[in-house]
Amino acid sequence: MQSIESNALEPTASELKKLSFGAKLIRLLPVYGLVILTVALLILFSVLLPDTFPTMLNIRAIVSDKAIIALLSLAAMIPMAAGRIDLTVGYGIVLWHILAISLQTMFGIPWPIAVVIVLCLGALVGLLNGLLVEVAKIDAFIATLGTGTVLYALALWHTGGRQIVGVLPDGFYSINGTFVFGLPITGYYVLAITVVMWLVLEYTPIGRYLYAIGANPRAAELNGIPTRKFVMGAFVSSGLLTALAGVILASKLRIGQASVGLEYLLPALVGAFLGSTTIKPGRVNVWGTIVGVAILAIGISGIQQIGGSFWVEPMFNGVTLLVAIGIAGYAQRRKGASKK
Image (tube, rainbow, N blue to C red; front, top):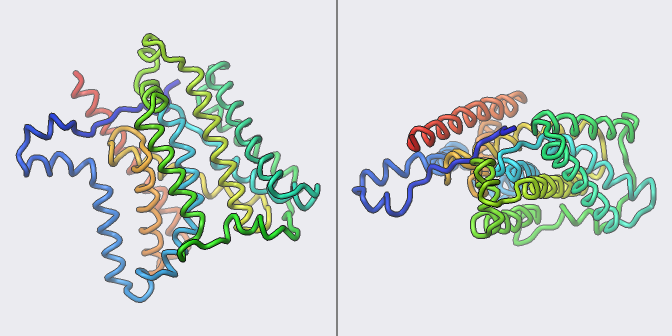
């Protein structure tokens, strides 16, 4: 049942006190290596492309393009904290962005109500995933793959293979199109959700319970943690956040089509897996996920500006995912070896 284990390898304060300055740097390098690499790439591309990369226009483009991936990565990492995986983050966004538009253009529903309906449906799908995994005892990978495929089929049926177009209210456009202090408002959405998730996962019993379940569900049960309730809650939260990303995508594209959305699945999972290799290696974490998305955004943007072809982005995402899974697996084996 455990698709992903959750074990942290970050050094403790007592451990660091015993080490010399050089030994501390060596011990902290694996923890913050991805952060250092992100900064290094940022400096490298700024030097190589001084006229295009370190510009406000490029920053706006990166934030606008990657905000949705960041939201989906955060959505994926919530079940990962509990040792599960949710593939509907990539399939669900296809249906949710279509519904956000079609509810307004085809059924005349006001945009605030349409947004609420989509968010509720996203949470409902998350609940269904939780029931399949915790009650029906289906592996999370298989269950969410099946649910996601059904959602994609519903999107195809609803659209009939055609685009959903129509005049939408300005209020709905402003969900994505507003700029605050020169940056897209979607970046502030990501920042706010990141801070909230960080506080919940790191400083509340909910977060400690989720990580305990991800590390050892049987031990969590023996300690009185209601694992079923928290895992189902993780899937509901993931579904809600995925629906929010769908609403933002609809506001950005202004049309709904079933061919858009699936390309977000791989980079979203890459960001979440990369997040488990930094800050708190061996355990998915919020700021690590944001760093993972950032290194994807910076790397792809820089390579494309240098002259990379259209296939560079999927190649970069795929290779990075394999590297991230390898590093995460190595970190977990080190954790097991240290326990022994």
